[in-house]
Length: 275
Image 1 (cartoon, rainbow, N blue to C red):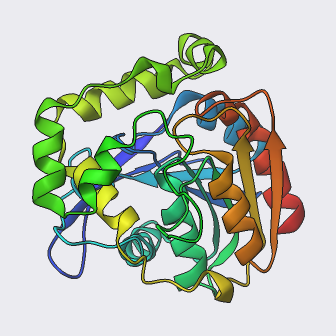
Image 2 (cartoon, rainbow, N blue to C red):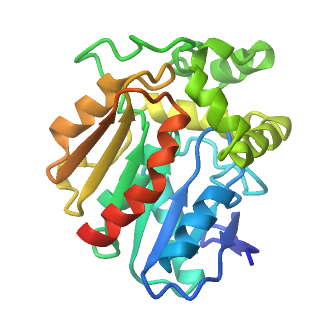
């Protein structure tokens, strides 16, 4: 059974959080959702954590799924919200896992909460914006991120007419959304219908300085990357791998942006073995 709870933070904001209420004898995993999503717990994650005795916790980032918006937030902000969510649920130490837009926020938790995070997994996660390589190369539809470079107002204007480019997903992605990960597609649709504020703020945070030191992360980190990802290209995982001191990279050549999530259960086993 999943419990949802609105948690009031120290600055007065509210975040909507979710708890599998599992006994958690094998630990606690905090999930960082993609962009856009509501933060609700997804069926494949619940099934995998329940089978492993892991308690699963999640929440909607500001602007998503009933959580108060935080204009101007950066990637590091997520760690401070997670700290308070964990406190509210009585959780001291936990692992983090994030996919797509959740990946950077999982890394933020590892960087900012070294005494609490036991390990981190980043699946198809975007890297910090940089001119060290062609950051946009391989993205089928980078318009939103390019608009975000000019700030939240420019990104919001782009959102008014933007439409999802179906070429961003390979056939394996569509198969995943039609099958095991159908709950992800339904949740993304709900998040999109609720408005673009969370997505706008995510994209601006991605291209602005993250305000975290990746090189200072002491917890083990697993990067999982699809070789055919057209949303976040493999070059992003390669860049992160070179800069994270305790990182391992799992390359999945046949996967795209969604089908790479089939690795989530194995990544949970990796966390238990390495955390």
